[in-house]
Amino acid sequence: MDWRWDFTFDVVLPKMWEAAGVTVWATVASFVLALIGGLILMLLKTHRSPWISRPATEFIEFIRATPLLVQIFFLFFLLPDFGITLPPLTTGILAIGIYNSALCAEVYRAGFQAVPKGQWEACIALNLSTYRTFRDVIIPQSLPPIVPALGNYLVAIFKETPLLSFVAVAEIMQISKLIGAEYYRFTEAVTIAGIFFLVMSLIAAFLIRLVENYVKRSILH
Amino acid sequence: MTHPMIQFDKVLKAYGALQVLKDLDFSVGKGEVVSIIGPSGSGKTTVLRVLMTLEGIQDGTMYVDGEPLNRMQKNGVLVDASKAHVRRIRSKIGMVFQNFNLFPHMTALENCIEAPVHTLGQSKAEATEEAMRLLTMVGLADKAGHYPSQLSGGQQQRVAIARTLAMHPEVLLFDEPTSALDPEMVGEVLEVIRDLAKSGRYTILLVTHQMGFAKEVSDRVCFFDGGRMVEQGAPDQLFDNPQNARLQQFLSKVLEAG
Image 1: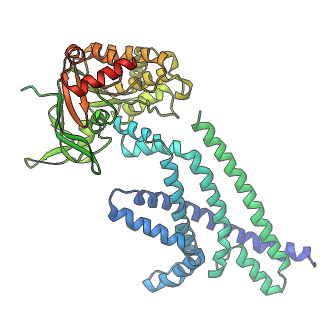
Image 2 (image 1 turned 90 degrees about the horizontal axis):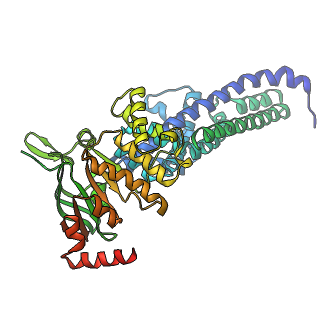
Image 3 (image 1 turned 120 degrees about the vertical axis):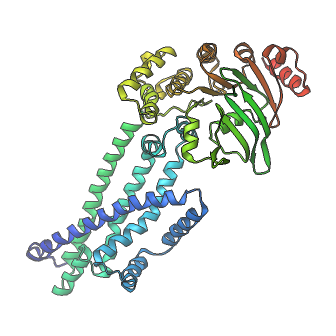
């Protein structure tokens, strides 16, 4: 194998450094979108009125049953037809965020359902508002199962971002492909991209474990 | 005009085809202590659960202190109650559960101040002071900083009672409050309930299998069977001279079991 260090340091790393920022930003933004979107979808899905819960359930099923790449293309090529033209990165974040919202909704639902029925009933008997019921009683108790599952989705989202290279977002995979095409050298760029994903995933897993332990310690006694 | 503290007017509660409460008419006077006894599946716990609005009813009206709970007046007619209306009326009722249902991630004290601070709008200092007074009353002032998992069943139930009292209810519902307890802890909980019953400050509805206790503290005992109130009367009369055949059968079984 022919590996050139000068090429790695002079060409690959500077370009990849910038691209890494795009990847991290796309990950964080998509994840936040998924966290909020998932909560909203879960609340809609468990709504009492079937006029609200049914469409939400169908939407979640639809999202889960189609490939993310198709959804990215769908948003990228179809939104302009509706007069919405977004930058590729924004479209990509939107697609990944919505896709993972559907998955996170299920995580939230499972977490909330794991809280015993008696806890909800105590909240009613104490006349707590819906907001207080969730904030002070239900969410704290559902965090221990929810946090690790959401952490897995953070890592999953991170590993999904290379799909954005298909719509020419300048994230790390796209840049490594471009470097390869420009210099006819793929070895360094693709290897660096792989190492970047490996290192970042390990760091993320470590941080998630820290948060997990913190949640367990502060909530379960 | 005096009105009952609690009134059920033709209340129907069904799970699908199974009617758990069949056109129940039932009322409890202000300050009255009423025990509900009956075999499992008789609907006795359901009376408390629908009154606490843990479950909806299919038909009929429940009144608390003269005001409809599940309905409300609108332009002179009764319509289904809004959430805000239910919350307002419900605030007069407190419930103690068979399984305590304390919040496991909060200390005994935090359990007792959560709702007073956030629902009644008390200051934290004010709520803490009252919660400590109530915890002292149930004999658990020294356990205020303990989490439910660090307390025995009897202690947890006493905290749950203090938590309920902190909301200043006028009506107390006890749903088999000692059924989940080890036998040696039953006494300490009954002692607290006895004091509450004797204080005369609360209207109390007690679902229990402790016949001796029901007889001792109740002004009236009601026997439920098959979703209806089959017989009611003063404790002496109901226990010592039961009229209904089902009640006679029930009592002989229960007393046999000891």
